[in-house]
Image 1 (cartoon, rainbow, N blue to C red):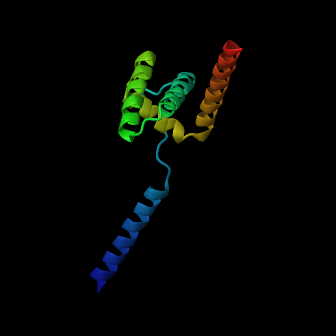
Image 2: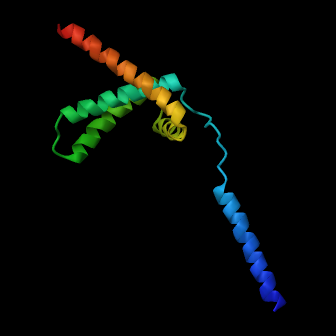
Image 3: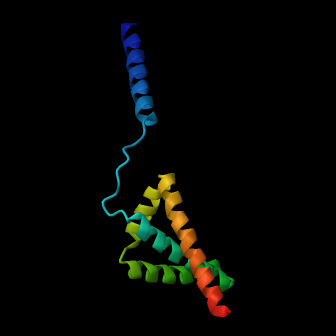
Amino acid sequence: MHRNLFQRHLWSLLLSGWMVAACTAPEDKQPENLIDEHKMADILTEVHIAEARVARLNLRSIDSSNLAYKHLESGIFKKFGIDTATYRTSYIFYSAHPASMEAIYQQVTEQLKKKIDTKGKKSS
């Protein structure tokens, strides 16, 4: 009887410890190779332009679209001197920090507007 009571208390203690651990926020460490916000905005601007280019191609196959995008994406990463892992790690980090991501996308929006305005002036 005492053994069952001990086991119940032990399980309660373990369950409580697990719940506390599960409910606490993980440490919010910046990755070592984090891309700074301004450079991330430049990269995302190029990424969105690449996505638009692929969409305009009207490729019938998703595989063809993915292949075309991957080709453009690798060119973007070479241009900025980063690799896929660094980009993904930074994107995930910024996605977990909405204020930073919002600041980045404000820059992206401004850069895209400038490109549209510049293109519109050339057409006139």
